Image: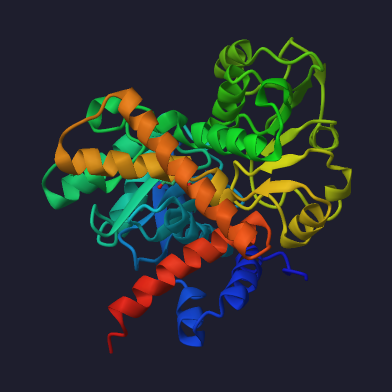
Length: 416
Ligand code: GLU
């Protein structure tokens, strides 16, 4: 079925399939397919050349039934309200699958941050937070990093919010620098989660992760850490692409060297360890595992027939269109859906929020041990559900998520 290019419609298609299987109450169905709150703000910024530019920012709180809204903020020229709403819905289902007490939210600013100076980036971030300051807070809505945002931006968010409320409020945002209330292990958590579920999927399918050949699309926070940790499990990373270029080496790429190279050059383009490769070729490689860790709508009906991977681990949010997903599932590809595969980030964000609220911080081993347990539990819940309902893992993840949110929606009852 066509989604008309709308990412929110793609989310609805996934939702409806699972809601039907579950026999979801029609009233709850209606509630869960509408965003609770969508905020649009105009953000004037004085640029370094003295001129004023006005950017547009969004924050969507899709659902807060299970707890404060939770989800990242992305800076990208392609951001739309439709996309942010879909991403906020996916955060709702992701938090429910990961079994952490949060609702779902997401934010975005239409901007190419690479074209801003550091001062302009800080001014934009602070103005955005000032505009949404009444809507966020440790008990209300807790942002985090996403595409093109990092720990420095989270530090500015924490500071701006704290200045407005008149005291230091570390738990208003996660993914902060360690020195100011960040959690050890948070930066690596999404990639670590991808590694854990890929390893569990391989175990389930009787594949050896040690011999697995892996291709990774994207070398940002998620793609780079997934590649690094999978290679540390003994897998061979044969290809990586990013926003600028790509590298292929059948014998395997040295990910440690690639991480250094990417830090220096802001891209892996030109990395000397192999030949050049583009995305269509990367998708078509003869690999065991494909990790799409870039943006939405990357795997479509056009390129899905070329995919030879046995496992697709969705590091990105929404990388596979519903039609392409159906096609891959019918061909027997084991697709680990985004709301499970990349839930490691928000799970460790939950740990960060808990540590901030306690004012007591855990060792990195403790964080990683708890993440391992949470990801394995989520993987098992989804796998067991897929077997019980004889369905694909994405539908099973939605079944788990919707039933958890629906149960509490009914328990809380209707106010009005
Ligand atoms: N942006 C990440 C995601 O899409 C993390 C969100 C969070 O930690 O709140 O899951």
